[in-house]
Image 1 (tube, protein in one colour):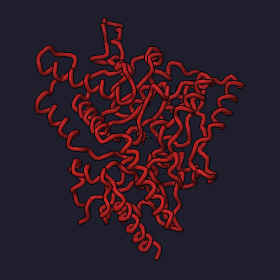
Image 2 (cartoon, helix red, strand yellow; image 1 turned 90 degrees about the vertical axis):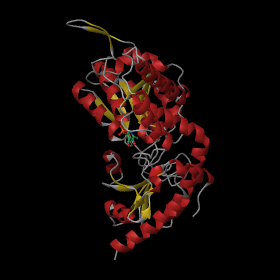
Image 3 (spheres, rainbow, N blue to C red; image 1 turned 30 degrees about the vertical axis):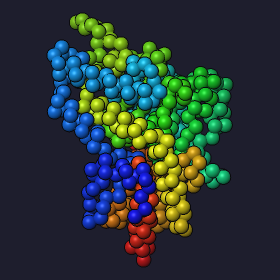
Image 4 (cartoon, rainbow, N blue to C red; image 1 turned 135 degrees about the horizontal axis):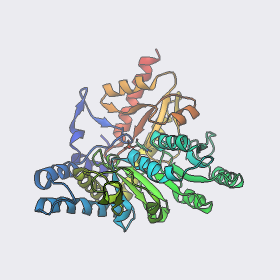
Length: 423
Ligand SMILES: Cc1ncc(COP(=O)(O)O)c(C=O)c1O
């Protein structure tokens, strides 16, 4: 078995990888959906409940102070991880979905007027589309789409054309239709496309349009630097970066935070409550009503530390090697259609495809019989799938523990699937 030095060292950190599925070693290739957890993350959760469990920011006893310290120290490491010095800009949520809904309700809704526009791309996950549809429907605003290129140019299909963005922004300005926000993913969860986010933000800002970046897929695959990217909002989920479920992050610039109304009312987010009205705590507490997921926050901090220990450049290099190998092996199939760039340039290790005349669910089922976990379906991107003229696809997506022999194993199982279904 060919295992890269990085992977060989790390696989033991992930207890689930010792599992057998249908008599085969687990080959987990559904990392875009969720990642597996290393021991240090599992230990952080257990350690919190065994030694420090208490509510935060409320008690003055030792356990409560310890829990508060764990919670706030974790916020600091997570802030640093995405290039933020001020922890007031880091709001804990349940995940990317809640972070985006927070921006839609607390920031966008109060501003949106009939005739305003919200700009999204055709490659967005439903989490970065449906909240904007809801906001548009209640305000009379219009949801505008920045199309995905389908032509197979040199760098392949599945990219966003920056010139088209400029044209849209220019047209809207001419028509005096205010674009209130551009909401765009940093990395596509289907095509694997890595969008040039810093350039996108620069162009949008030149037209006075704030930008929300969905970093759900980017966070485990590339360094995030919100200061360099200059985005107004950035959202991600802990479970996509080897951390626990139920915890996510919303970063917002100071000027945007100042414009945001409370998201949910409850304990922890108030300064003063009177019979009819209340005043609010400062950010981030203003947006964190109720008892927060302290154990999960400590698990996310452990995950971030783990990724930093492994090294983001090493993770990127490893993913590049896996993607190069996967693209080469998938190209051996004459009856396979790959969606997204067929080159490694500006793409990540998320690869969606279909075998001609074989339903993606059938493919995934045959792969499961060999212990291989891939996703089949629309991957919460029905608009994108419709643009490609399909309803579903098979998706393999890499994590830092995957290796090239696992890809080879998948390729053999794909051959089998074709033999079974195309007789
Ligand atoms: C690009 C993208 N955005 C948003 C989400 C939603 O993340 P969550 O379900 O953790 O809120 C996902 C999850 O797959 C995603 O890939």
